[in-house]
Image (cartoon, rainbow, N blue to C red; front, top):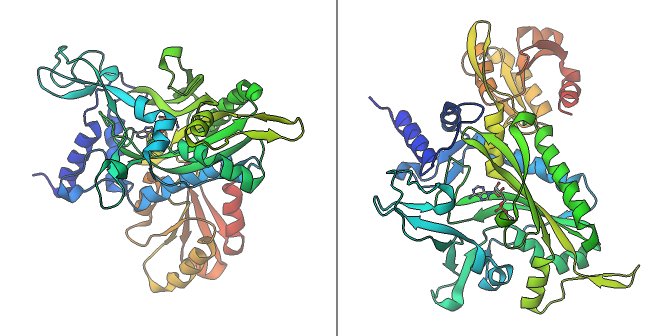
Amino acid sequence: MATPVADSLRRMTDLAADESPRTDEGADGGDVMEKIVGLCKRRGFIFQSAEIYGGFRSTYDYGPLGVNMLRNVKNTWWRSMVQLRDDVVGLDAAILSPPAVWAASGHLANFTDPLVDCRQCHSRWRADKIDGVCPTCGSTDFTEARAFNLMFKTHAGPLEDEGAVAYLRPETAQGMFINFANVLQTTRKKPPFGIAQVGKSFRNEITPQNFVFRTREFEQMEMEYFVPPDDSPKWYEYWLDQRYRWYLDLGIPADRLRLRHHEAAELAHYSTATADVEFLFPWGWDELEGIANRSDYDLKAHAAASGEKLDFFDPTTNERYVPHVIEPAAGATRTMMAFLLAAYDEDEIGGERRVVLHLHHRLAPYQVAVLPLSKKDTLEPTAREVLGLLQPHFMCDYDLTQSIGKRYRRHDEVGTPWCVTVDFDSLDDRAVTVRDRDTTEQVRVPIDGLLAELQSRAQ
Ligand code: GAP
């Protein structure tokens, strides 16, 4: 008999496969996808949105562990793109914007996918994703492709007339272009410099696909890097290298990561050169991030449409020019899924099978689990003292229930790199056991030196 949990898992797996023409199998074989979807639901990473109403297609809610991990993905990006640099500043622009922005950017005219209907089963597809064969019924008889604009249109205010039309942004990028002059004036930056933004974007995708890989509501991490026009090829290469390395440094194996340069016919309307960082997903190679040379397309377009000057005057050369833009544009939600897939592993510890996520410590939902060996009250004051010592520095879980072995497994499964066990000896020797997720090695560490020990592991 199907249980509610089994039912909801089946629904999520169905929805994850929703309209997905599967291509060739990647490194892990097909079932790793099902395992990740199951783990995400079971352990509180990702839930189907509006699940109690049967689920709302292509939207997902991030649960207690997922929200930690997604935040970590975004914070790790922000750390490398903004915090550790002196040439990039941040921005948080509005999600709702008027048609003028999207007319100038070219999205009203060009942000379309080719839509076809299958004449046999009447399903709808993106023509460029199905190789001429209907994934539902196998027919090759389709209507002519027509351009379908992917932007979500709404109305701002109580009147639903043309004058009230607004759009949900389909990319965060335009917020950076329309604030170029504001940022230039308030920060006194000069090219080369960047504006970075992390936030939600919305696209009315024809075929949402593969769990959180392609959804209608998602999060992006984008940076617009403004450079003198002649320097743009150099900076394009620089950012290809930087962004590729970011994924490697966070644990994506080199054999599951590649850079793919776009053919001329594939370039977006604003781009003179683009390369994608691609990950080997269970269905094959697919995009994590696009790095584009957007030239001066956007600044010129917004300057022409708004009548505002969007250029830079260089007092050292007495020259005025419109900077060119290199844009690394990544998906936070999609990247989180790639990190989960790359981290997933099954091994054997002491003859027992375990599921483990080898997540980088910066990405794991919890960095530390504090585990009193027993529920007995005598351990609680010391365990709480250890928790209080670590909480200001690490995201911690305090876990009391079930045997210590089961608690280790539970934390292996969600990728917690370090478990700290408080036992009865701790009351006398003021020391605790630190267990490493990947090696399962355990060492005794004095409580006084615990923070320094974990901080040195978390470099
Ligand atoms: N500003 C340029 C831009 O938006 P893009 O390649 O369309 O470029 C950048 O999007 C990244 O955003 C993609 O590489 C992907 O990671 C993420 N992304 C785009 N559409 C998405 C969707 N429907 N669902 C999830 N992530 C998406």
